[in-house]
Length: 239
Length: 237
Image 1: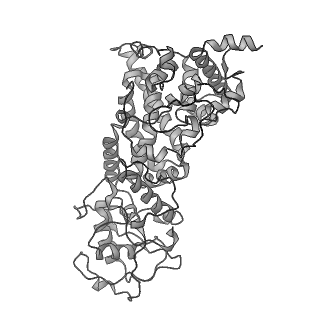
Image 2 (image 1 turned 60 degrees about the horizontal axis):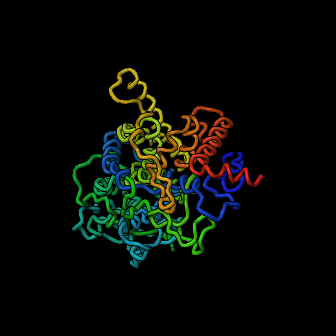
Image 3 (image 1 turned 30 degrees about the vertical axis):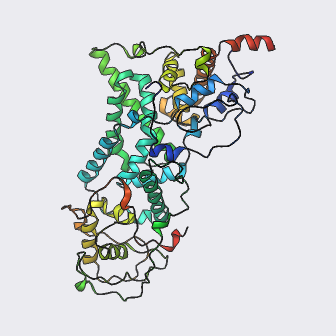
């Protein structure tokens, strides 16, 4: 009768095998069935990933075509920090594809050094909207003090983004604008629409209606996240 | 894809795990394991670590983050491809492409974690495959899918080969010889890493039936892979 190791494959052994949990009683010689199952689930070969660029392109095109309503930023408030960390993890993975021994991106509780929060203090009082001009060349004030939750608002991130010359775009802005290319317009609209920057908590700022229009924006879309989020990071994200 | 050399991909980094230093009980001492750097055979749900991070990628992709979508694709597409090979053979790539268009389109209305996403994605793929098969039956132009593996060489069982890694293609070819319900049950559990309930939902069957089918599939595979086990078991009785 078919066995695994020296034991017959019953329902229990089958369930453990199927879950990838090799029974403790496995024989000490090569186990052909385990080898076989591992081969079925082996890591991807390059040809199995050949369609990735096309799939992502279709995905992006689909989202731009849909032109979704203002972002569901409110829903993301609680997980924003984790998502940002995830983006960092993703960026670390993608930018380190040929480096062996790179810290596994799975540890999402650690921020790599480049993503330390900026040392600048946020003490400059906010300016009224009539003076907020978009454009990287404008000298912007420091972002307003963060809201009670300690997370910079989207407006704060926008100001920092513009002050930094429009590059790089922090992940919450990319997420809110829908696309790295749209961040500049999104921020322009957001800051124009707000009566005063204020210390609004959380990312629940409403996006301006024009945030979805997409004339080409300065930061190039780059699939490799060399321009991974390096914007102001809330205190929640301490390593 | 036999004996292919792979470069390390982001997927590998995301999914590789720390290697325990001691030799594992099921490895012949001193023998190298399969390519890819991982010494521990991973399959089933164990081959999808980082569930929490990947579940967050699902959330991000739902809101249009194409980097997160790319991560999901890299994790799931190879597994879907292998499953589709079982159903539609060489048409797997085409059917998979169609499936991902549907997945990308419908993702905003998907709710669930990474395991749920995998189950949903393979359901979409399966429906595309069945549609494809229905179409092919009405307009036959190619050999039937069960002949798709006819030209894949049978697994070489010589002593020298025993220490080499089994290639994925050879492993798939063997699964393709199983009855279809057993093959699907094994693939959904082992390759897509679905639990018994989710696999049953994908197949539209009762969980008990899918458990039994998977068990029978494993028994049949074990039988094919190690015919000596029958003699050994008889000796031990």
